[in-house]
Length: 466
Length: 144
Image (cartoon, rainbow over all chains, first blue to last red; front, side):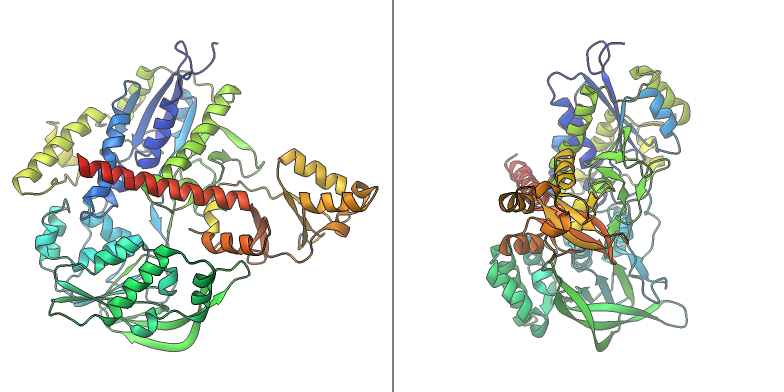
C-alpha cells in the first residue's frame, strides 16, 4: 500500500457538521502542499454553515459574510458536501470507517443548560436557543410557538445569545423586515405585544459576557429605551479593585455605557429593555393553567475565588418579577454522538488537542478527531474556531505522517457516494445549496431583504424540482 | 471564557506523584511528558503540594544528592488552586501578579486537571486571533 495522502492514495477525511469549525478544518488540510486530501462534509441539514445560518442574529448580516470564505473552501474540486445526511441515522461510524482514513466531529454545542430551579418546565418558559433557531428558520423549530401576547419577558443570562434574544424582541417590524428573519417569525413578532424585556445577569456589569459594541447597540434601538438600575451598575469594591489592578479599556468602556443607561430618561418609545445585574432566578411562579406568571429573584453579591475570579453568591434579599414569558440562556453543551466517547462533565467529546480519547485507556482513538464547540465547549467568536481547528488538523496531519490512520476497505470517492445514496437518496450537494442560496436571495430581493429562507426540507427539495 | 474550555481539550490524565518518591522520579516524569510541574498527592489522592522544574533546580543547587531526596522535602506546599468555572482573564492576572506558573484545578474537592501559564497564554492568543479574524472578515465584507 502506498503512503496515505498521495496522488495514488489520497487522504480521505469525513467531517461531521458543516459549521465554521468543519470548514476551518477542511481549509487547514487543503493548505498542506505535500498532502493530497479529499474531504467529504456531512450535515444533518440540507444547508451548510451551522450557527452562521441558524444562530447569528438576522440583524447582524455582516457577521454572516464569513460564508464567502466557506464558499471558497467548498469550491475546491476535492471537497464534497452531503447535506440532509445524519450521522448515526443515515451513515454510522462503522460505515465511515469503511470509507475514510480520518473522521472529524464538528457538531457544535447543540443543547442548552437548564437553570435547575422549580417551575422551569412551566408553559411559556423556553430555552433561548429554541427562540433563536425559530426566528432563524431552522427546520427543527419552525413549528415552535411563543406567547408574544405577554407584555413582560425575562431573558436569563447576559451572554451574546441572551442579548440577541432581548434585542430581537425589542426591534420594530420595520427593522426586522430588513433582515433575513424567517417569515413566520417576522409575522409573529410584528404582532408582538411585548412591552418590557428584562435581561438578567447573575454577576455585575464588569463580568458581563456581552461585548462593548453589543452593549452600545442596545442603546440605539429605534423604538425601545434601554435602562439599568444605578445601584446595579455601580461597581462593587472587588470589581473596582480588580479593574484598578488591570485596567482593561474594553471593560471600562462597557461599564461607562451601562452607567449611562442608568441615567437615561425615557423618551416615549413603546418598549423598554431593562438590564439587571447581580440577580438570579430561584423559582418560576405558575398560574392555575401551569403557565409562567412571575419569577422569584434573589439578589447576589460577589466574592473572589482563590484564583481571583469574582463569582456570585446568593444573599437573603428576594424580589418578584411579574413576567409572563421566560427565555433561559445560561450555557450550552454538546450532544453525545453514537459510538463516540463523551465527557459528560464538560459536555464535549473526550479529547486531547482534538484527538478523540478512549476513556478506558486515556489514549487517542485512531482516526477520530473533534474541533470547535464539541471539542472545547461554547466559547469565543466564529474566528476563534480557526486556531482551534488548526490545532486539530495539525494532529491529523502528524498522525498521517506516523501512519496512524484508519484502514478503509473502500476509500474511493464513488464508494462513499454510493453509501450515502443508498441510505439517503435525497441528499444535497454543494451545488444544490448554491442553487438554494440563489433562490433565497432572489426571493428576498423582491421584498428588499437579504434573503427569504427555506425553512423545511420539503420546500428545499421542491425548489430543486425534486 | 472559562478554565473549563482549556481542560476540555486536555484528555483525562493528570500526572501526579507521591511525596515520598525521589525527586529523580519527578524529573523523569517531567521529561517524559514534556511538562513543567506535577501535582503531589497522598494515598487518598488528596493534593498536598506541587513540584515544579524550578523546585528541582533549587534543590539541586542546595543539595549534593538532591535527586535522591523525597519530593515532599522540596515541593511547594502553599498551592493556589482553581475551579473549572474560573474566568480565564482573572486567572491570567492572578498568575502574573502572584508569579506562579501552574494551577491545579479542583472540581468539588476532586483534582480534575492542571493548567500552565502557557495554556492560558495560548488560549488568550487564540481568542485574540479569532476576534481579529472575525473583524477583518466583516471589514472586507463592507468593502465588497
